[in-house]
Length: 465
Image 1: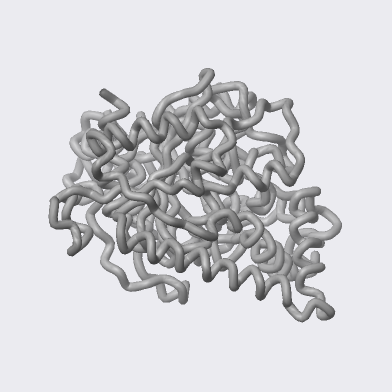
Image 2: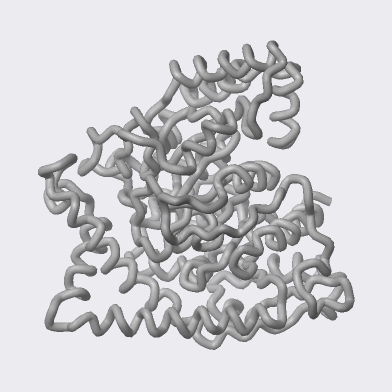
């Protein structure tokens, strides 16, 4: 039973919202001490909300798209009355005083906030080991769950919720989706409001869903997407009904005369893929998708190898700027006194880059390189509808296997480009290598999430055969 079918079961009274929520609460209580996905459990209010939804259904009243579903929230997204710690000692006693736009929309559609989940501190990391409250374990293999939305990915994979929200700066949703064998979406920049998100870098961050099935991601994207007066970078683009309409192959492009999707792959990504087994699995799926190679096009991305070097100077500077409000006077502790090593490394790096004597030189160079990468993608999407690639170039490290921060940063090489270009990207689980999940990534041009979902669905069908 997929997520949409579950909602219909709840609306019909075959499954009560209370039963759904209680099942997840029982699982969390049983397994969370081992996995460490949840930092806060909203038990009493979740049951209360579920009872209220069941009562409305019995009375024949209308309920929302997410009626009775258990939603886990990354601990950098504001929910009124819940701890918004960013998995840091800096904000461990800070409780939300308002709801983020995405939370308001979820509550309006009768989704139930079941609790706040772990993450790398201030979204700084790609393993899930940088939380001040202990690492999150991958529930499906003896590896890291990926980050920074580690708790979101682990909670979904461990059957602790129906859907989780994460935030994606340079792969922070897609990395744990791939490592945990689930679906994850990074929306186009400006598709989802960031109001209420404590972001790592304002130029890149987007809130998005993780789910065990693609329908859960589609459903949540329908709910949280759209223009907001609270966020000036959101656009008034129409939000498609992803759950009801899968595009015909030809509907994305006037140039598509053959009623076939133009699938792009990039030699640049193939060269960057350290573990060739991963790339071979992805390539095999693409060839099956196109019934051969006649519809596979080369997507030339001349500057994508600069993505990691371009991304981090921008992130460092913007993160440093964002942490200046954490001075220990208004709320929380002083950032420099209480933050962990990786968060401090990024903030201090931003401080150095933005020093007056550099006159913003390195930041400006990074912005220039970002422009080149964005132009490469714009040109590529003139000839292809989607670009398919691995999510990660290597398998996740084991829990006791430590990486240098240089190697950890390099592992984001396949996810960062989507954030630099502002396009949408989604992850589909396509199998395992040595028992470790592998995710395929679909890039589509900005605000073409409908096309992205269409291809993801086709890949899902191939994988499930």
